[in-house]
Length: 407
Image 1 (cartoon, rainbow, N blue to C red):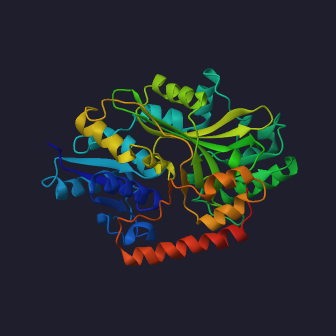
Image 2: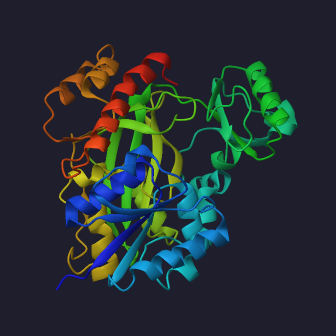
Image 3: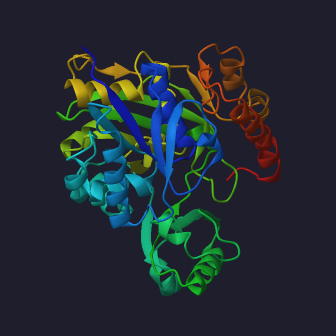
């Protein structure tokens, strides 16, 4: 007999909707969400049972106490409540309070010690170097150090960004960007001065720019079960990413590829660290030497990671089989997401216009693609108000791509 369960998703953004969609498609269950304020992606959805709002939910103590209140509301109706975070902030809060939360909720996240190793770019790169995992040439510095902090770095053009973007955006200032592209030391000096003037004292990453447009970017998703076994592995080529200054790094279109050896190596890299749960790697094919350079690992599903649902499994099924049935339903079969599945937030005419000039082969691949998905849309979501809103969101992509050039 199947167990009754409730998906409790922390977050109300597009990533949260994609997770709720995964659970509804797989099991027909509606999710409960938690967030700070309403967002259009989830506000009117018919596949969401309830959204609970708490303005200061990102405060550590408030987070734990509020989730306990929610648990008390639903625990009598369900045998299990499956807890999932939709972004870095919420996943970090779950991990930080893991010992207390696991008394009431089912989830698969690592402990805080390992999370700090992987979330810190400096510590993560140190681990990569020990394992001979290729990374871009990188220097860590503080804005107040000026050019002296970048002494010896000569890999221009380069990019510079905050190691912790969630802290960086608290220091709003004119010209602030998630990622800055710089061509020389003069550009670097200008960026460092503007960041220093904002009062931001956190760590910055100065890194060589790997040439190539968005289509050189790659995405890996893996799921490692609670026993430490790799159950799912996928590899996708990015076709496009957000064009706004705050959205760089958020993929808007991908197409799956055959899983190469680099994906297996990185999944094994995680299991050797004692990792469990979903993980998402960002990397780029360097055309200069044809090697993949790893940028980061996210200790969660990315907002585009639910392209794995286009295989014969889903993110929801992975979690439920592992957490509630101890892997008995899946029998721990390893899943490799097959090639040529198209996942796109942006309308097809826009995607074609992006690719038509320089990527005729990719154009042919996507033109008559039957296996495709747009996470903004779901036939099982009957909300007319949401359909109208998502139509406007989709049309707005034309404006965003027209006004903002690629990174």
